[in-house]
Image (cartoon, rainbow, N blue to C red; front, side):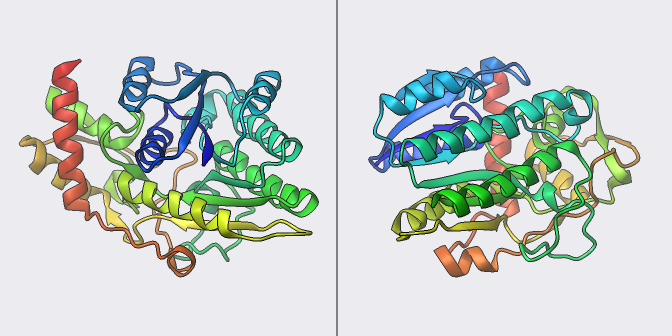
Length: 323
């Protein structure tokens, strides 16, 4: 198949593109290589990908997207490009409106106009806000986001529903839960923690460490994403599209302090911990109910936290030495 992957220099997009190419698909990749975090890291990720068609392009550039769709027979889209990060959305809200809403609208419009019926896109566990009911289920209400990032992801879900209903597209949103692993984002806790622990600097532990996260290893995320894509391509829809939303996580919340302890053991060094209050827009617990994803595509995460942190720590140690 010819699959368009947006955000192919990003953490998840890079890993998905590699997996698709390794199984024999053709990948057309898009990424604007912005400087929200290290462009050097993004370029290093691109070098990991086997030969493929890459376009340095912004999904907000509708004319460029049209050109890409016109010049390729695209069978499906895995739309992972987005402005990420809860905390940064407090500083630069416009970036989230542009990339997450306008950019996603442009992708949906191109799919509509060029006959691409199958789309898998990234939503986020952030849409659940401060939902007190756990585990988080896709049946729960998600109309009270507590960050602009979450609000834009919820907006994407609403647009997906509308485009599926009006234009017969098969669209599946994946609410990702705390993805970590080698080649991860440097603005997320695992790399922030590892960097400061090895440099002997304090790590910031928010909500005084009273946090739980559904840490999900990148390989499980990739396998689940591609399983959903394959399932979407099997769907037959004549007069109306199919719009679905799934949680994709490990389904096992872990105390933040436990995560830090395992990371300390793997790095062979104790962290200096700076305990701080909860950050605006953050939540104390995330926990994915993945029963529906298991039912539909047989999703079963395989990588334990201990194994995942070991793989991450080994990669980070080598990556930091080679920089």
